[in-house]
Structures are given as C-alpha cells and as structure tokens.
Picture 1 (cartoon, rainbow, N blue to C red):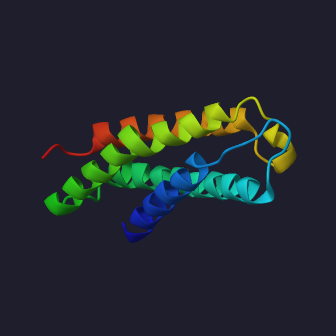
Picture 2 (cartoon, rainbow, N blue to C red; picture 1 turned 180 degrees about the vertical axis):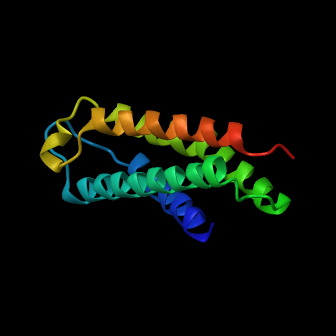
Length: 130
C-alpha cells in the first residue's frame, strides 16, 4: 500500500511539473524532456502496481480489512478522476511535437493510459463495497 501511495504522489507531482511546460514550436528544452521521461516512468510503475493490485483483489481475494478497502476506493477514485485525465491531457497537448526523438511515443502513452483505465474499472468492480 505504501508503494502505491508513493507512486500516486510522484505521478501527481510530475503531472503538475509537466503541466507547466511551455513549449515553443522550434525547440524542446532538456529539462522538459527529462520531466516527460520521468512522468512516463512513474506512470509505468503505476500500471505495474495496479496490475499487482488487480491480481491481489481478483485472484487472491486477500483484501478484507474495511479500512484498507476504503483507502483503496479513495486512491482509485483519485487516479481515475484526476490523475489519469490530467496525464492524458498532457500527452494530447504535446501530440503535435515529435517526442519519439526524446524516447517518448505519445501513442504508446495513450495506450498505456487506456490499460490503466481498464485496470481501474476491473479493480473497482472486484473490490467489496463498503
């Protein structure tokens, strides 16, 4: 749970940093590229944690503490309603720039976001309601 919370915090932090990017049509500064790559890595970590959480909730059915379930519902709500839409907005805003040069493929990022959205739905449906 602690690593899940940490990744959510980092994800939120880098969304804010990337949201503040002002890009000219002619160049992309290195620090912005670094922020985008960091956001990509954090988002990938978030996806892995959600995959693990999905297995825990669906396959192992190990979560039975009401406090933990409530906390998970809140974290999942935040990710679904705020974090993922914000990240999606960042990648779409940058869609007209060739980020492949920076090692970031926007289509790949949007597909990963779709996978995260599907994982969120799956986990939410499998978690017991309080």
